[in-house]
Image 1 (spheres, rainbow, N blue to C red):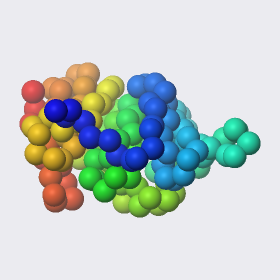
Image 2: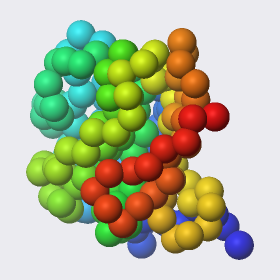
Image 3: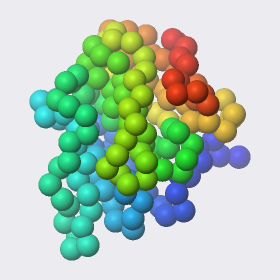
Image 4: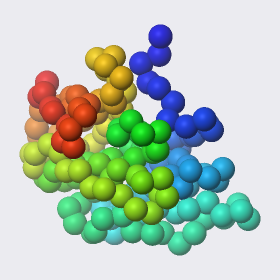
Length: 156
């Protein structure tokens, strides 16, 4: 039995784990790209029918400084969400409304260390996505999915 459930009927591909991820955020048949830059923040580049990508559409602001990125369905609604880890600031989950352009922001974690990696999976097999966070200068943390608006965490 797989512990990671698919978030859409269409296939999706993660292009890289550090700073760049590809997914169908707008729930179209076109691949979209999310990128983070320490100076510019996060942006979505929407796939176009001609095979090119749109100009970057900012997600959040330039601060806090983003350092890690993953895309996955953490809200359980079948729509890809964006999770961004930061330097000495809380991580943020951008919950997608399905358009890929409007997000509900959920802050989680603390402001200790730098987040440099995520994994999203149903670790405890309760049907909810969990988020494992790798950090430098602070303990790594596993946040268990919850039906409330704020994930609960256990430092490991």
